[in-house]
Image (tube, rainbow, N blue to C red):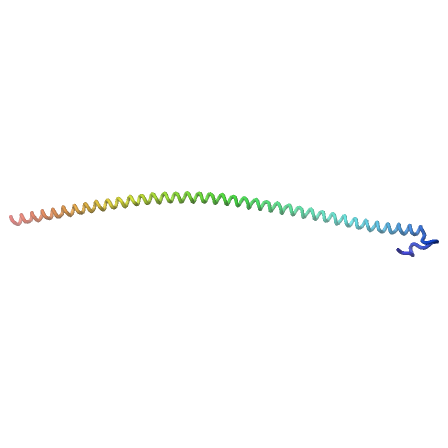
Length: 150
C-alpha cells in the first residue's frame, strides 16, 4: 500500500483518500480479473476447439480402424470360403483321378489277358502249324520217294 497516495489525517488516514485508494485498487483488480477472465475464456475456447478437432480425428481413426477390422474379417471369411471350395475341388479331382486310374488299370488288365490269350492261341496255332508242316513234309518225302521208284 502506498502511504503517500492515501495521505494522513487527524487520527490516521483520510477516509476519503482511503476510499479512493480502495476504489482505485478495486478497479485495478477488476480490470486484471476481467483480463484474466477474457484470457481464460479465449484459452477455454481454443481448448474446446482443439478437443473438438481431436475428437473428430479420434472418431475418424475409430471409423477407419472399424473399417479395417471389418475388411480383415471379410477377407478371413472369404479366405475360409475359398479354402473350403479348393479343398472340395481337390477331393473331387482326387476321386476322379482315382476312378480314371481304376478304369485304366482294369483296361490294362483286359489288354494283358487278351495278349496272354492271343499268345496261347498263337502258340497252339504255331504248334499245329509245325505239326501239319512236319506232316506235309513227311508226305512230300513219301511222294518224292514214290516218284523216284517209278
